[in-house]
Amino acid sequence: MGAEGRDRNHQAHACRPFFSAFLQIPVQEKECVATTEDKLCYSRTSNLFQSYKDFIGRYCNNDKNEIMNSMKAYAEVFESTFDPSCCDANISSTSGVERMNVPIFSLKNLTLIPYVLFVRKSVESSGKESGVYALLESYIVRRMLVQAIKKIKMGYSPR
Image (cartoon, rainbow, N blue to C red; front, side):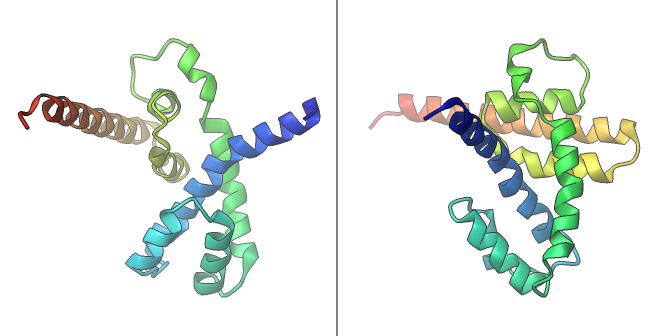
């Protein structure tokens, strides 16, 4: 595969987290009355194209423009927010969106992306935004610690 093909594959791979994360935002909005079963189905990333197609048909009256307009706005937020190279840089000591890049990319915790996107686009006060990021970061770190402790205990438990 030539350099052009590798670049195209890299771009496609870099876009996948956005497309899978974005669908979670309209599915969870109050105006969307998606069933729990549909929400679970749309959260799977294995058949993303089919999920979008189904969502647009069921909840957007086949109006692609509605979701495309929203997607464009969120794509701009995504591009200005996330930086996979953050793993190689020093981490800020204050809570903020820059720190959220660390658990997302270094720990491969892509489930945070829709939350960060929604907060980034919806919260108008930077103080409130930082507070939400501090809460998210704290929650994720605690959750990871509990999971690690459980794994350690299971490894030492008598059989």
